[in-house]
Length: 193
Image (cartoon, rainbow, N blue to C red):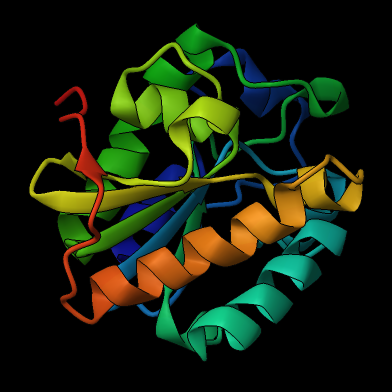
């Protein structure tokens, strides 16, 4: 993983490289069975070079501990794109396509059992779906031999989106069950390869 991260650190394949402070490749246990995938780094992450270190990250850490009994040392955290989109806008499809080989390399190296997607962008992109997170969350999906658990992005809970905090809690419990080998009762729709 360190070799892949070192190569990604000099990536200039898309326009996001122009505005970054540094590449935010990912962090955590490279042997973990659990992978969290967000959309892209924000300002705090761009400055630190680590994913989910701002307010959203603190909430994610707290919820992992409370609902799953886990810390960052027990999982791996990454994003769809490794450079901060300007103004924290959603990554564009061409940017995600250009950056996708880095995420694919992370997936191949980690080979996680469970992937928790955080928010619309990561969920729609990985599963190849058009529905929003409100419709997709609440169940597990079979994807490339893994279980994908979509949930709200922690920033939605921080903004006070109705049901986001409770929904995240339920989804993290679902992810914990999947990690324990308990097949979620509602494994749904096969995602895109």
